[in-house]
Image (cartoon, rainbow, N blue to C red):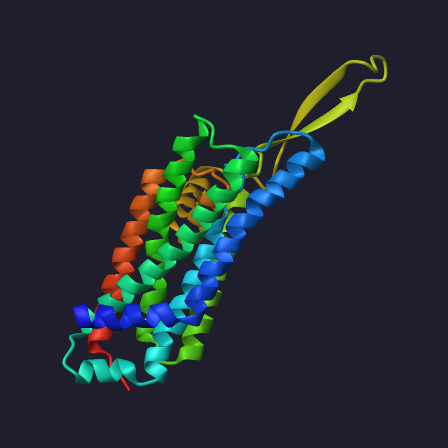
Length: 278
């Protein structure tokens, strides 16, 4: 196991896409506070540091899918995966060596954003307010746990699919599908129960009356409960909530993320253990 980890971490240090991911998120961490500072000067109202601070979770999801598919897919293309098994390494050790390195890589990408965002944002926007700091801290912790779930899913796909191009396609499209589903469910749950219609009476032009019109797009009953469960359970939905600092059930979401990571890893190991490696 130690030899496998050493070999994978040695590859990681030289991996081009890993460097691109770290540099991209580092740059995003600089650009986000600069954009907020520019808007603050333009419109003349204060913008706190926490605005947009967790937006990087969306990039994390995308970069985790691309990194896992390319990093692990290269092992199949070069025949290294088969050579490791022939050398006597167990399949479980091989699987976990890739999972550990992939999670580490995604964590480092996230840290690159957090560090650069703080170093740029604090001088321009100030530190988090006392009320916002625990909220941001909770969301950041949940994002790292969500990163484990995304990476576990993408690692399972990459370990079970021996074609690099197919792996990349499945992982990237799968993550985008989860994110789009998250946006859709979030939008449906945000639909108001009633439309507010305003009109002025002819006799009393100053007085404004309000009538409530039912919204046909509003979800209620069992269907709403299902949507709310999916909104907390699915990784893409969690990413949408965390990106806007609007997540309410952080502990529940983190538990679901760990559950997904364990299920994906367990399924991946079970199938990989019986798979014929070319």
